[in-house]
Length: 436
Image (cartoon, rainbow, N blue to C red; front, side, top):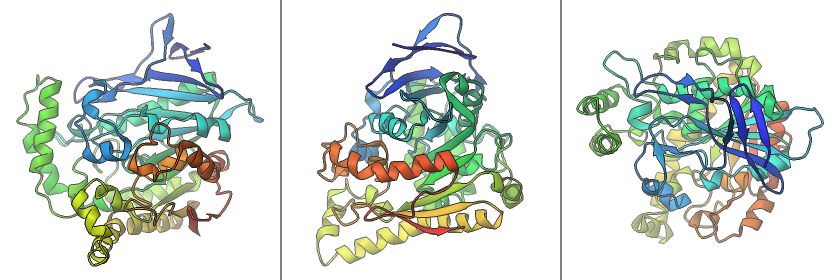
């Protein structure tokens, strides 16, 4: 085992054949509905061998179907501000490793940084980059306005605090604090969209990769936000974790909002610390975009992830007469929430002076009802560890996935190193549609 000393403390990790790993380092603490505070460990050596606890959350049928995770069976903590670090063993030519910071998805109500499907040894060792994964508050504890209109972006403030921790400490692990790339999927990508314009974030990162950003679910949310707050205010201030979970379940079952916002009841709020009002976004992008190249895109069958576990709808998608109807509905919903808003954002970012590449991911598009569904790019990107028995692997072995995904991992890690896309196409998997 190897030890690291940094400003935040002294840590002991473990090693694999290709990497050093440190899991579950606390980067901050928080009280309920309060902002996070950077954490420094007491003197002594601290073991970082166990997976980081998840934030408080309910089970997700979609994530159980896709990744086999039952959130009722994982350790959860209300103050969930932990991160994990993967460091390649081989030396870097530049003396410091580029740093990639992974922000997990889960609709701002599910997920955790140390799920096996995010194992980062492959990405770190092949790309010769440090990969950091982090947890942040979700659901009612992370993204609900209070009556004063504040405390609405605590999960986002957690992520920003983690980036501050990284800037202060990553050089002690061999990382380059001036070359930090954010990459995230779904809610993680939406978090990055906020960080691009949030107060105090401009110097915390260099590049950004936004995968399947649900921008189309972020408008017209006011009525739903009020309804959610009304339900939350019924929860006693001293409620224990089980009561918090029950309240969140009640909120999710009672949201009556129509349209795309209903698919993401919890999300960042613009106009509340640290986010600007929406009308100021273009102004801020004109100031910052030139310093932060981005790669943004999505998958060709995003919505298939939400029907794959529904036997009835999946059956209709296989039946020749009803398949066109199901496919049209899926494509329309994915277009509204992911594809068109991402294209619009890319154009907006380029107009503000930023370097922007727009991609489309299509791997296994016609292989099953899932095809290139939401989350599918995570399989070749991270290597599919621990997922071989699940439908999302398309009956492929982990070894098959590792080999197929190597070009994708190269594009992602090359972008982290240079802020540019190194190749424009991976046949059968990825196309760069436009460079701006």
